Image: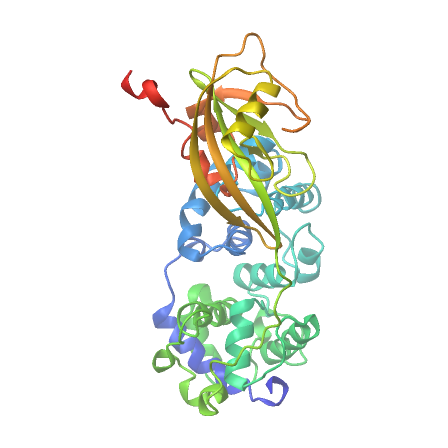
Length: 395
């Protein structure tokens, strides 16, 4: 069990391994508090390789907390488009306002103060504090939970908050003992701490240790598929391997089954424009632009009737097939149609109880892609926004 395992024996081999195996990542090369914060929020629910381009785009457009705090919402959501979980970026902006108003535009070098910022929990606060400021506090994510439960053969359910808190307490004690959370106090018991400090990124042992734990879980002791035990610096120290428990650990209680929702999605086009609408400011995908959609999987005739109810004259219809999108607690099962309609006369917005209360906005198809944040839930159909129907193909 983790509480009975000698964690001290893990630190030196892990840090030495990290020196030669750390991936080159943009936020590691320049680990300012702002850049570390942005990267950690983006990395929640998203793979490292996918985050790189989003990170570069976002930090180029919004290089500091001041720029983030005043960014217009539509522009902010467009910069975040593709990363999903849009409340993350909304909370980041709220936190940026706090940082500008209360800390002069710089995230505080204080773990407890970081925890009070909107959208920052124990993991993110620990990551920013340790990686950007060298403060010896843990940053426990799924990777850390996995590698430490395996090495100690701990079969406690990692979904329990009490176990995560226990792990954080054990790591904090490991990092600075009974001393203060001071960068100089880290690993006071370790004989080669001074030598290792001279070799790690920016001389930051706390940041290197937390990142090494994450790196080990992301690249060696992986979540999906067999772990690469022969490449692990802890191979001879791993109790799960010795006991043949690698496939059983970590133990993770099953989540509740996702709720299934059926939808019909429309690519509604006149000659040059395509219809979108803005979702309500609260709830799933709040405030984002979406393709018109209704509950249920409708047939062709039902879709044509609906389009007529909206006040449009449909000319052609083309089925676009079925698609599925998975959220954390909901699963959308969708069917789609592209419908060509006669150009509406002086009708910039149309409302219908079946389509929704916000009405439809017809915009240039290219503008829709470039200027409006359309969530990836609609990706299977958004690619058809420039579709040509029937005789249009021969123009």
